[in-house]
Image (cartoon, rainbow, N blue to C red; front, side, top):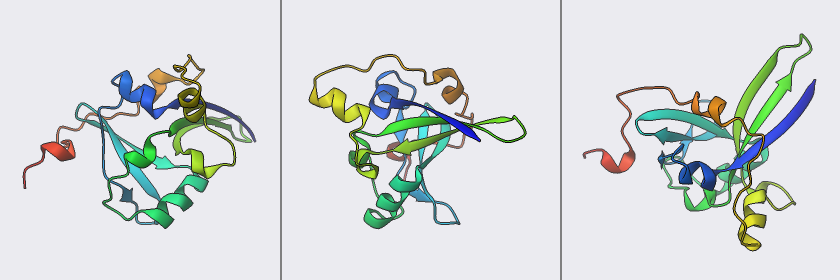
Length: 143
């Protein structure tokens, strides 16, 4: 198996309108944390990387607003080539605290830089948003 990584900052996705809202923390039945990104009313559930999941599970609870935690997060596009030659693409949320290295977002912020174009497949990521009219941003729901 070979693997190639490409990433984009969450800040860049918000600035470009690809992500227009972020849900509170969610947890699937197996205990894996994720958030739902919205693009208008189209949702895209994105899970955290393994190391970031450990931090999230140890810090937050289901239903918590974790947007401040995601300030320097990146979305990593992982392309895994399996033994049979098939390529599988997955998107994961990576945060700086999950590694001993600084993230691209942190470095750009510290050095006052804007994000450069990467090999991240923005069109493929946009296709992950599935149209569902029942999805409404949290701040718009009525109690």
